[in-house]
Image (cartoon, rainbow, N blue to C red):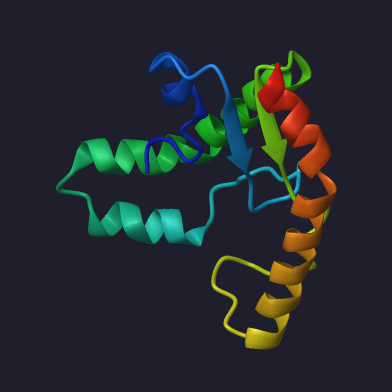
Length: 121
């Protein structure tokens, strides 16, 4: 909950090659939603959880900015979809999920040469 994409932890642990696979397109920004308010009310007895829930969108967005900066520097390799075609985290339509999976699989194959080059450095 506190760190949506823990690439910084991998770098802190001494990993010199970090591969990050995102499930959202590069321009995606997280915003506070109604679920945050409901969760905050449910966890009001746990103020640190409520604090993390409220700060999560800003932390995620800052983390993504840092991730893409590190990608430009060649320190991390990022695989991200061009689009999610409106498929959200609670999608249950098997056909839509299968289509998105196939698209992601093809994207991964297309990036294989670049990934191998990154790993050789």
